Length: 281
Ligand code: ZN
Image (cartoon, rainbow, N blue to C red; front, top):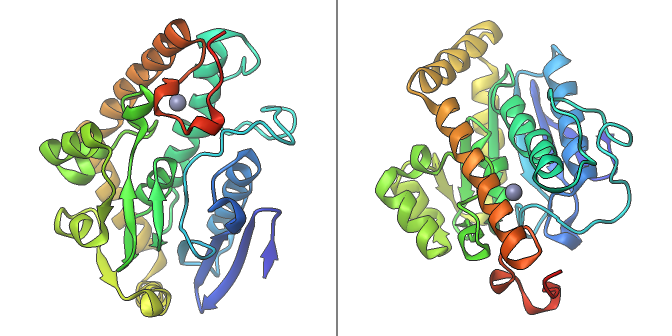
């Protein structure tokens, strides 16, 4: 088993790497350390020819509560953490720095994981909130436990959904609007009915089921698996998915800029828990 500060990697079956987010005390909320640990673990699995399928999991009890926005520990993009995209200027003030930062850690890094040249399976239990959706959606398949719930509450915070905007592709346009407008948490069964989730499995059996499916996939020829993933992803790209994500990302940045002008912070404080609200600057 390899280990990073915030991520565990093991081999639950031949040809299968399992990357487990391991900040259960923070409901596996994704801080910068976890973002770059995940990226390093994905890269290592991609480069390891003995790995044919990758499982992304979260240490119990929850898959992921989303992005951890608390500024603790290392913060230096490009210094503490290696840049994976093509943006810089992370310390610039205002919209400049924010867009650069979100390009790097949310948009471009998620696109890298989405295009990783091996099949990936998200194993989702408990809560999967906001940025947690981005992690699951970046994977090729999603297996959910029967207690899993999915929610993007970002509209409540004055922003038009999380940075990796694939909601219409995952849920269909009309249900995507309901999901975003209401910020309701939807059950695994509802996500399955809409085609967002491949299978819903009893919590106790969910990981065994996921590993068994990964093993079945790992028995197939590696190159054919890679080409199949490429073929499906490029089909989505040809249908305009990348362009749609990019335009929604620009609107997301506009929302942050609006909130900054209106409230002195990048999100509408009315949508934050009272304990983390701060007065407008
Ligand atoms: Zn944002």
